[in-house]
Image (tube, helix red, strand yellow):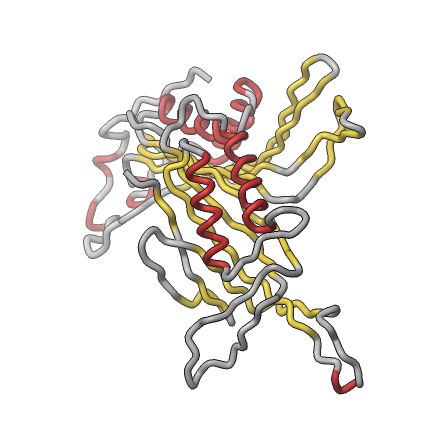
Amino acid sequence: MSHHYEYEKTWPGKENFILGETENRDVELVHTGYGKDMVKVLHIQRDGKYHTIKEVTASVQLTLRTKKDYLFGDNSDIIPTDTIKNIVHVLAKFKGIKTIETFAMDICEHFLSSFNHVTRVRVYIEQAPWKRLEKNGKEHFHAFINTPTGTHFCEAEQRPNGSPTVHSGIKDMKVLKTTQSGFEGFIKDQFTTLPEVKDRCFATQVYCKWRYNRFRNVDFQAVWNGVRDIVLEKFAGPFDKGEYSPSIQKTLYDIQVLSVSQNPEIEDMEISLPNIHYFTIDMSKMGLINKDETLLLLSLSLLPICASSSKFYVFLVGVGATKIPALISRCK
């Protein structure tokens, strides 16, 4: 782990390259980067008989100071992607994985401190949702169950002599409620075919990402747990009566406001809530009345609705789908 690469402004054989034969002056490399994707690690921390696990999948992207590998086919600055994979594994061994955010920062710090010619490191990590088995409040010492109630992910980016920028997020968290949701009072014109509805199913797959305003002395896991609980609280409401949602936009905004207000470490937050439609199946031709008991998932009509601090954008993202991105930011 003590290897240190000294960047040289010249490299052996540079004088043998003929610019006109190797570099096209009509084009410019705007951005370059490479790395290793899908690096998998299961880390086990053993405290006597009590074991703790973190299973992660990491992607690491590096940007180098020179572009000679692209322009001249000179690989002398390239850190092989297999080496990147090995470094991730060794860092997990020696540093451990307290949280995926701290592990991502460990990876950034290693490449910047070990290789002078690395000008940017970007790390993306997903954590597998393992939960310790428990019964009657008693935790098992070494057995776990996979509970896909939302994927914890993070992103970290750092440049030389700079502080890391850290994001955390939740993805693939599917939630559904069978009432306490409606959509009324929208614009109606000659093109409107959508009927108003006071009571409907509300289903979505949550994507939520937030940026931290600091990276030291942050309990990343506690913040993530807190935001997840807020998402569920504002979506579902009290257990006995729920909470009415007049639109996905309103529910989304309420989640953002409560998350930022209760977590001073969060600088800004973006959320996407695709509207997963379940429609009542028409059984009238069979002489049956369907009282919203049997519904059909219309899988192609996902309407991701997200938020922006002061304005909304609408653009097509696929067949039968629209997107309204939204980002909320802490007021200065």
